[in-house]
Image 1 (cartoon, rainbow, N blue to C red):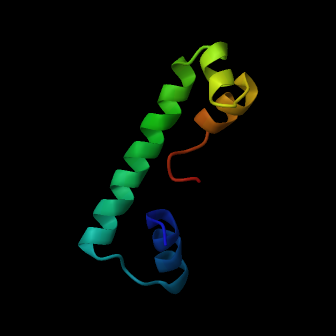
Image 2 (tube, rainbow, N blue to C red):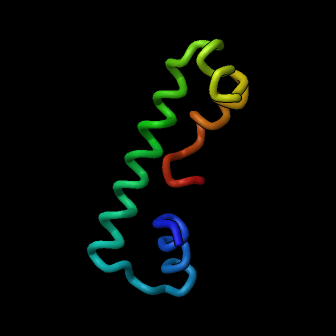
Image 3 (spheres, rainbow, N blue to C red):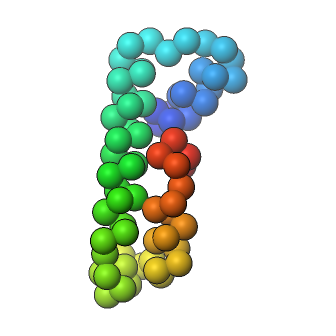
Length: 68
């Protein structure tokens, strides 16, 4: 189970996250935000190398960090 789905599960069940789950969630959010920022600086050739178009990269980069 991923950290993000753990957070969503906790919200749906109204279960509070324990400290370690909360830390994992914050780490995942920071990594996701960093990855999305990194996408913005790639040129078209680099995006092509990883199989993305500029439009797809822009769509991903503009998502909020908490969204998968």
